[in-house]
Image (cartoon, rainbow, N blue to C red):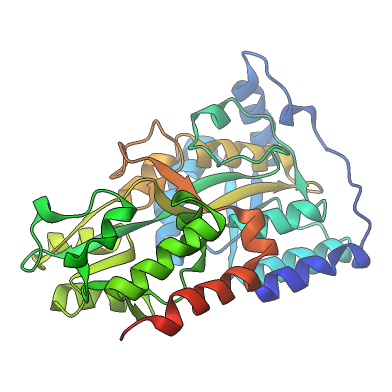
Length: 344
């Protein structure tokens, strides 16, 4: 996130930050709203999106949209920093090629600060998980990466699992806990959940001192170590990892201490979009009917009406502003409180 913050911090020095909305459909609330959006989008006929979305998953998501609406989707896909950098550089050069951006919420917030995104007033916003739409309405979460807890089913019985974060302080978990070594966003959120400030930090200090935590780099590695029995209980793996391994017969299962902490990816429309109406239609699609295609690919949907493996789990989204502004602070706290004292 350091490179993200640095790119965003210098952006306003590069270009004027005062573009105006290009169409009234962004705020239109009439009963024929979608009808008007579809008609306007079909006239434009195409849209361009910059995204980090996995290339192998793009057809599953995009083909139904193109088939239904007759609007061509042009995708430029790269890593987070490159998507952010290209968007900022093109805006500074007044080169308006992109209609939509889709990547991490902290990076979306960085673009919002530089007045690159367009506010949208959509009825589907009310159906999204709490924390999915900021007050300025310039981006909205589409999918969640949810950290859950995974355990080796040969070493731990389901009835013995902890039910709250504070249950992890039980001495029976001594030497059995593992964590991914770059999960400072999860750490910051659980500090809040367990009392906030010094009280939340004390929870982690006590946990590490009493029971120890084995830190591993990479969620896939941590998941595999649970399967191997080297880490009986992992605190931070993405929900689809143990689920997929379980379906293949591995001795692993998962559960969620609540609130489960999640990072989100989000979508936003460029203020100077050359195809604003097609962009708006795809925005609505991603938050509404497109959610089912995300579920089919094992993503956790942001829309509460969509089917989800975490349907009845209370979810707390990480704060993108804190991620953007306080990364160094929380990385250092995570290192000092957890990693440097963790057993390996």
